[in-house]
Structure formats: C-alpha cells, structure tokens
Length: 508
Image 1: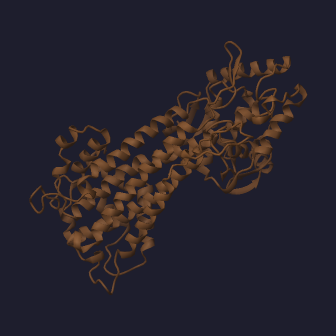
Image 2 (image 1 turned 30 degrees about the horizontal axis):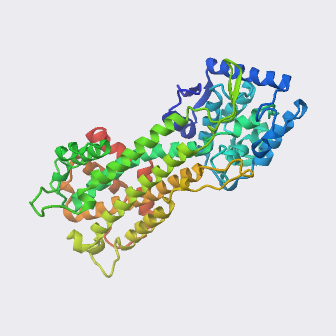
Image 3 (image 1 turned 90 degrees about the vertical axis):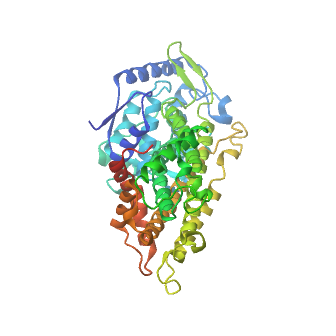
C-alpha cells in the first residue's frame, strides 16, 4: 500500500511526492532488475576486452581521449565523484533530496546505464532507511547533467561526504553505519552513470509544479473573493466569451469563477453599477488561464523527463552498442522551468494589482487601506507594500536562466542549460507568490467584512470561513506578519482549496 515500484517507465509526479514527502518505500521491479543486469554484462565484457569506450575506458569531458587501463577503471570512477563534489550553498531540503534519489534510481532502472544492480539497490536502501545526503543547492550548469550536486549524493554511498539521518547531520560513513548500510566501491562506468543526468533540476521542478497545480486553483479563489469585495461584473466570465477564444486554461478559470461566486449577492451584472471592470478583474480568465496552460506544458515535460535515460554513454544491451550522446543536457527542462517561473510570477503580479484595488479608496469605494480609523491605524497599507516587494523580486527571478551559457571543460562542453538554476528560481517564485496570494486573501476577507459576508457565493463563503478560522477581522493595527504566515500556511497545506472543493466540487 505504501510502496512505489520503479521500472524506469511508469513513475508519476504523484509518485515522486509520495516518496519525497510521505516516505513511501521504493522497490525495483523484477523486469527492471533483469534489464540492469544485462546492461552491466555489456560493460563487464568491454572492460575485459579493453575496448575503448567513453566513460568506461576513457577519461571524461576534455579527457575523453585519454585511455584508462583495466586496472585503473575503479580509481577513475572514485576520482570522478570526489573531484566533482564541488557544490556550494545551503543544502537542499529533505523532500528535494528524496526526490533526487528516487529520480536517479528510476533512471538507472531503465537498464541503459551499466551499473551493477547492487549499486542501484544501495541507493534505494538509503532512500528507504532515510539516509539523506547533504546536497548543496548551487554548482550545477545543468548540461553534462547535475554533476556537482549528484556527486554529493554519491559521496555518501561511498562512505564519504555528509548525510542527515534521524534529524542529525553526520559524516556519510557514520550515517551509513547507523542505518546498517554497507558503503560501496564503485567499479567501471558506475560513477558516471550515477551523476550524469538531470535529476536535481527535475526533482526541484517536479515538486514545484505539483504545488503549482493547487496554487492556480487558490489564485482563482482569491480572485473570486476580491471580485465580490469590489462588486465585480460576472458577465465577463460567460462561457460564450471564452468558447470563441478556446484556450483551455482560460475556459476552465472562467468556469471556476462562476462556480465559486454562484448565488453571490455581492457580484453585479454588466451595466448594473458600471459597464465594465478593470483588467485585473475582467481579464482574470485570460491572465490566470495563460499560467494554467503554461503549467500544463511544464507538467508534460516533467512526465517525460522523470522516466528518461539521461546519462552518457547509453548502453543498448540487445546488440551490445554503446552510444555517446547528449541526453544529459538540461535544455528541455531549463526552458520549461523558466516558463514555470514566469507563469507563477504572473499570478503574483495580477494578485498584487487586485490588492491595490482593495486598499485604494478611489478604486474600491471602501475605507482607505481597509481600516475603520485611518490615520490612527495603517490597516493593510504595508501589507500591500510587502506584496509589491515580492512581485518586484519575482520580476528579477523570472529572467530566464536558459538564455545564459558559459562554456566549460576546456570548451568541450561549450553550451550549458542552467536548468537547475531555472528550477530553483521557479521554486522561489512559487514561495513568493504564495505569500502575495495570502495577502490578497486577507485583504479580500477584510473588504468583504465591510460589504457583508452573508452575501458571498457558495464557494467563496467556504474560503472566507477558512480564512477567518485563522485570521480575525482587523479592527485595529496588529502585527501583520503573523497573519500573513497563517494564511500562507493555509495555502501551502491546501486547506482552503480542499474545503472549497468539498463544498462546490472539484475546480478545473
């Protein structure tokens, strides 16, 4: 019930989350194990015959023309790992490290990498027993794979480096001993097979995309609350408008807004109060929908990558062919994760503009900064500042990493993807966007208190009640960051989305 079986072909993003966050156990299927053995047999034969094959009997990168003797192949693999462990910065979180380990194990399970089955089983055992290597966040070019960070993972397999085990940061050998796992001695091809791949960027991006699926729904909920707080016009969400421009995300968002505000007495119709709303209200489906469509594209790319063979060279056991290619190059994911960051940044961008409409009396018709005693109290004045600061930071972070490249390895690796930077930026943007949306939820709930919460729609009423369970109406100034954190936790824990969907059905 709590085991994920890997074979290199059928892993899902949901499986990644189950292992990374819920500590599901991992096992390799028997069919995959046989493929791994066959691939390894090819490597062993090449070593025995001293055939010149990149990464097996040669050096790496610029040293690919240096032939390594049979006696030196083991030293070659160990030297590869210890020399490549050059990561810097803070360590990745436990959930990201677990996702990295799972994705690397799944890629090796495809049977094109040439590792011994026992080596793969050691990685899986570490994952199952909770030995989590200390993997620094920075240092990957994302081109010849995530070489530096993955090397830190492999260090612990060798009894080197550092790992977290049962809440303690320990020397790698100590962590392995306490978990009852025997460190390995790498043999030919194994070091390269373990680090030559895109698993770090893909792990970060997969968890970010998974969280983004809920966040886009939450963005619709926040927008619907603001729409009611500002007596917005619902005609703009008429299905006929969106069917004549049939972008899927746009259509779904418009349906969500109508579902959330069903039976509302706060929304208005075209011409009832005004003829049309500002873009931040009238164009919610077009803006949110575009981010939704971008997310769908990214998820499709992730689903391909988490079941891909991304190391080099690849071993095709059927005809004993070894091909040196470029599947380690992170460009497909670099572009996708840059797109993900941009899409998430836009959700924050439009949310902050809605916050401005809520706190500005010239735009809302409500008390300035949503406080009853303006002047004595500042209300939501600086909450909007904070949202604006986060949005501005997102604009810097959303600059695409994938347009940059710095040649490496004496110009042998002369174009790199920077995909891991793109993934890390996307995750930071997601966290910033979560906080902006938290501020919008608080401001919208405060504005609705002036309008009368009894007039809310079926879905928005549930969202309002969840907010008020944690954050009380602001009658006089208080320490706001506490409320922002509480609301952000509601978002991250999916409490609001889950409660709303429980009341009105699943949002699209």
